[in-house]
Image (cartoon, rainbow, N blue to C red):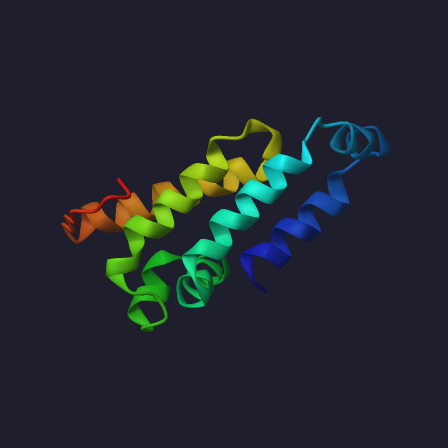
Length: 119
């Protein structure tokens, strides 16, 4: 079971109808969705796949398996920070923050210091 499947199962089991109503009352503007879609699109398919891989199996495992390149981490963090900039993205903000933290932990553990325009 992947992390996403587990989170989905946990959310579905604990959600009440009131929580679901609250979820749909979040004032998310379509321009926010379009903006993040453009940001995701600008990553290009290779980095998009790396983002997906990190979310599915984690940072360290993704890098060990060769599915994520260390050089891509600053760009991935930059994209995740864009998600964090919009509180209306709800749980996605929390997930993005967690993922940024995991990337930073990995960088600290392996003393990765990358100079990037994305910091």
